Length: 230
Image 1 (cartoon, rainbow, N blue to C red):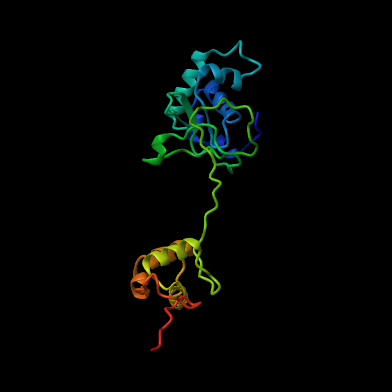
Image 2: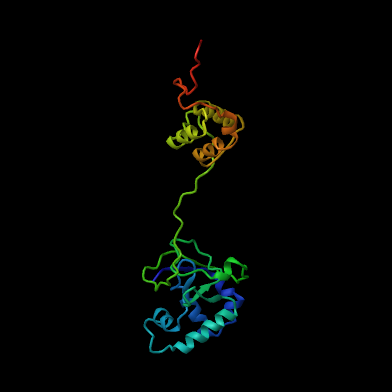
């Protein structure tokens, strides 16, 4: 069972104090079993064993269902279903530092209409390792966000650029230099300069640098047609 730090603000919460004594005790126990997002299964049968592991013979599922309803009426929790139809709950304004990804699906209404909730000033600190999972698992975003940057003077076209320039009849040496001058002169910043160059040679830069070269024309090391002197 995960550890919890509950601040004294819950003692002065109007919503919490509006609960019957047994429902308030259930609400406090619920804080110890939800995940780092304040979410957990809303199945009364499961909550009996998780919230009252040593008193399963004293608490009935009907009581759990009633206490869930009372907590929801005071806007202390939100009851909802994941896409698979499994009942879930979320403690509103759980106010914790998220440590692990949630194992339970987010309430779909949260992404559409913000819900006004009453703060209970609680905080979670340790992950729970044995939660019952909903099939709609929310996975952490691990992809690193790339930032736009200036081009470097030693930037070079890749093999695909070379092939494209040959196909379009573009002088790649001159195209590269003009592209770098354009980027540095204008202080341009892009996330992917390779992709930007690809668009340029197929657009404005290709039209500007295009050269009509006969396939049989001999080119110098810089890619320029060798003039034939008579």
